[in-house]
Length: 112
Image (cartoon, rainbow, N blue to C red):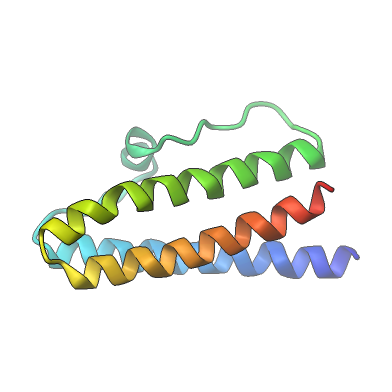
């Protein structure tokens, strides 16, 4: 079980690390500077930073909440991309939605 969980978390971590580059590239291609530091990202996030050392179940619940927050944000941006006829951004949003909805489902299954 540990190896399966380790592989799942490592896969999600790796996917998120790669996604940051894809999102930054999209922002730059639209002519805007992409956030480049933790403090810049922290100003933009709706996900609260965890404090202390929570239990495994609490950490997983926090990860679920984070995945769900990203889904809500992506859905909120869709109308803006549509109004701008920005199909590449809409495509990126669709991809992110699929990934984060799947991750949330996988993480929720650990809490049952």
